[in-house]
View 1 (cartoon, rainbow, N blue to C red):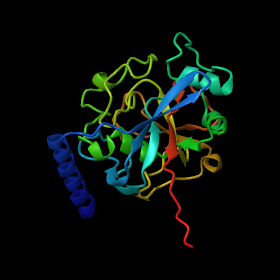
View 2 (cartoon, one colour; view 1 turned 90 degrees about the horizontal axis):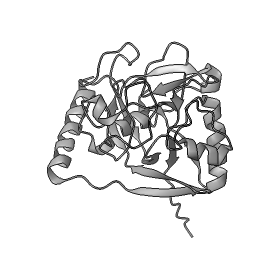
View 3 (spheres, rainbow, N blue to C red; view 1 turned 135 degrees about the vertical axis):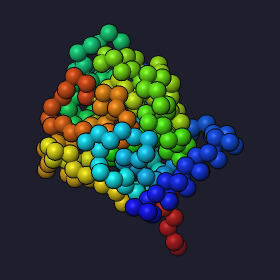
View 4 (tube, rainbow, N blue to C red; view 1 turned 180 degrees about the vertical axis):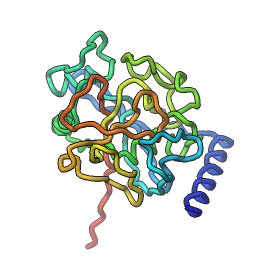
Length: 260
């Protein structure tokens, strides 16, 4: 635990340095399916601490102790998957409120998410995937630019997220340190990690993947009801709740140099 505390202190000092010397504009890449565009943001990986750190609330669903993790770099959706993107890929829209195509798609199960990602990958020629919850939380905290807020980009939930229980068009609140929107509020977001009905402890280590969701029957939901960024919840992987949405990821392509 002492090592985790020292690491957290060093990361906070690095964050102060970032604030003093300026923050780089996030690196982004735009993809298109039919007439619908969506943006992915590059997240530089590294060693960090996630879980119930000092600025987070002590909800029972959070692991008892902070966990040290090391993550590879990856790409993440700048917003939640919108209804217009889901419809462009899947041909339908399962959301109950269809008043605006920029609303996050909801009423989707963990299984539905995997079907969507498979089809999206086929249409774009890219290998999209679900986020692990460690990747989700690292990005929600602002990655290497983190200012250690309670919520994603602020200590005021209303500044960065819609918390009224209704769905709103994405990217209409303030972005977090990485330029990501709605990682507090709006739709809940499925993660890759499986769990049992009673949420398991948050896994640490090198690129933690968590349990196998189909085996466990439940998976982790993040951004639950405008909670702090460390809050964790579980739902049945086959249940498409009215609030359940998705944010996608893509691994960084590694260049392999073959020796002659």
